[in-house]
Length: 185
Image 1: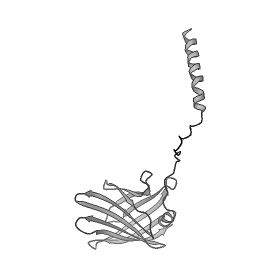
Image 2: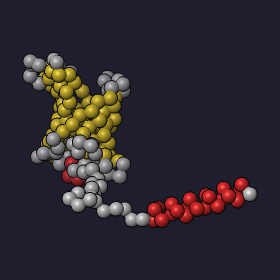
Image 3: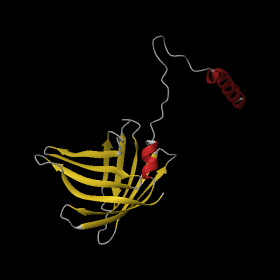
Image 4: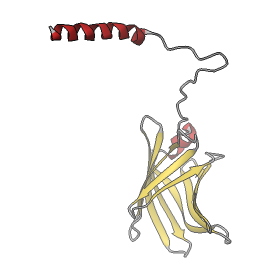
């Protein structure tokens, strides 16, 4: 008997709740707009098309010591992010994996970089303007310390990357710079 009452009670509760599940969403109150989902912007198509592929670079440190590196860029995660892989050639050993894309919260173009030294850094940018993109970040505010990467298109098949640091009251100081030539699209 108790089972029958429990079954009847459960059926009545389910029947009473069912119409509420089938109801359409309520319209916004007068004066309010319904919020639409806006997907975050994607990596600028012309920037992605330019950088995508494999690159070989040569340059120097501020001391004049030479540096060479291999870099590749690939669109990832349904075109939302541009993956960046950087590998210095011997005798240097720096390796990094980065992602360029738009942060859905700030809607700013960002670069995250993880490297073989255990560093995880986030930079932001004002965007791809006239073939140049600068990613920068503030390391500390007192005293002011900043760093930035500048990627500048030189031709359809070459670009320059410059890594710089700034520590107040000094001016920006170049750490290294390389010119990359396209190896493969």
